[in-house]
Length: 356
Image 1 (tube, rainbow, N blue to C red):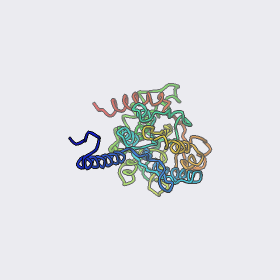
Image 2: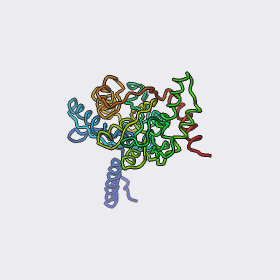
Image 3: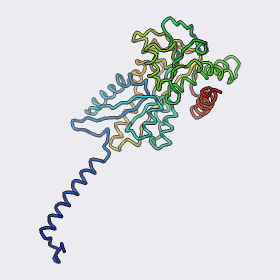
């Protein structure tokens, strides 16, 4: 037998033991290599990283304003460099990606419903609505973009339903911006009928949505993709965030902004994806979240054509922001808990999209 009565190892057994020890060391090293690494932990030279997923039209303000602003602030206060890994797509798309396991640590979404989906799945476990302003970081109204000179004579949502109008509209099945647009069209008639008669006329709102959707000839997967398609010359009109129209005009594009008499203000929530944040990373991630409501970040939102939520007077610094005669929010429908099942599903998906 290999082991002597006094516990000594024969030479052959000593070789086997050494081999087993080497194998065990390699196995432990491999296991360590496979352990999940913190995305924001300290790095050599004091560098740290935060992974952010945001809905498509946040790209410019985040990349050029908010992210470098926070990095500079953290460097001043803590002496560490902060790098960001950022990804942008339709709000429902990034939500689905997070649900499938991507390592986002902070998410900024077009609609509240997407954060609630993450909460129900256990990806967001903290009370995100306990953040300032109920977790809403910025807002913007929905407008209509038309070609220079407005050759189709479009003045309001109703004009989009006229024969001969080719409308680009992002896909409500994947884009939060598209869902806001549906609420903007449908809600505009509810708001106008409310102002005129004191009651909301749902039949009138349904008829408008049907007529407008009948002119949709292209449904890109995000608000940014819809803008890109419009920029390349397709279509006569595009319903989108005000900031998209202002960016295009500032870039010299041949477009005009039509401001509907009644339209919705979209409000955009941010949340920590708690599942992906290690305890030692939490202070950095929480500091970034708080920074989103800092005056510096709120002014950056305004500079890039969003509306601030902390101070209305900040918005006066951007003369391009339009006055809306009859503004409304998702609360016109009773919040997202009712707006999605009753309007997006019940009206658009079941009565408008599904043609007899």
